[in-house]
Amino acid sequence: MMMTNLLPSSANATSAHSSTTDRYKFVNTAAIVDRFLDKGFQIRSAAQSKVRRQDFAGYQRHLIRLTTPYEVTAAPGDTSNIELLLLNQHLGSGSLIFKLGLYRFICMNGVVVGTDLGVANRVRHFGANVFDLIDETIDNIVTSLPRVAERVSMMTARRMSADESRQFAMDAMTIRGVAVDDERRRNHSAPILLTAKRAEDADDTLWNVFNRTQEHLMSGVSGRRRQGLRRITSPTRDVALNERLWALADSYIAA
Image (spheres, rainbow, N blue to C red):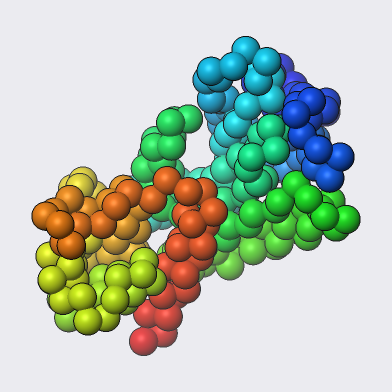
């Protein structure tokens, strides 16, 4: 059952743009969405980016937001379904990306407010095993959902001391690439990473510390020269960073 009427034109494309090479493997987004629908996912929203060149219309980057069957309670009275973000394009300039998370707001200019849950995969459109990798990725996402939901619940129950929270921020900056001896940037950025932008994120649970740190690391930290952190705009770097942040948060559950 293809839900083509709910998807933008680029997600329903049946071929890649003519500028791509023979090495480029076209991946039909609607077909992938349909596979998730068969597993109980539902389309929450879908959008595609604007194009500067008219001949790119129908092939541009698009984002499908799918609701999974799994619920988590990230805070008292705040129960949400885990979501899957699926990003793709047919212009040869980007990968197929899958990300699990809890998201508050998403738009095609790159603004994603919420929390990635450590299950993220990037599949390049090149190589003989592209479609095998996609099959493996879909299976991995579906089978990982129960454990991911369980870990979120455990993070919400884990209280963090002030020392633990600061150490988390310091370790997160190391993951981000800030040198251990860069005390000026670390001392400036650590308190900001732990600052809640919303009242519901203020409680010092592991979940909230992880959520606050991740959001600030992705959106950037303002400051004078050699103090702040630039915003991350690369989807590839986004995926790699959030996988490592999730592993860091996971290490605190049993501590």
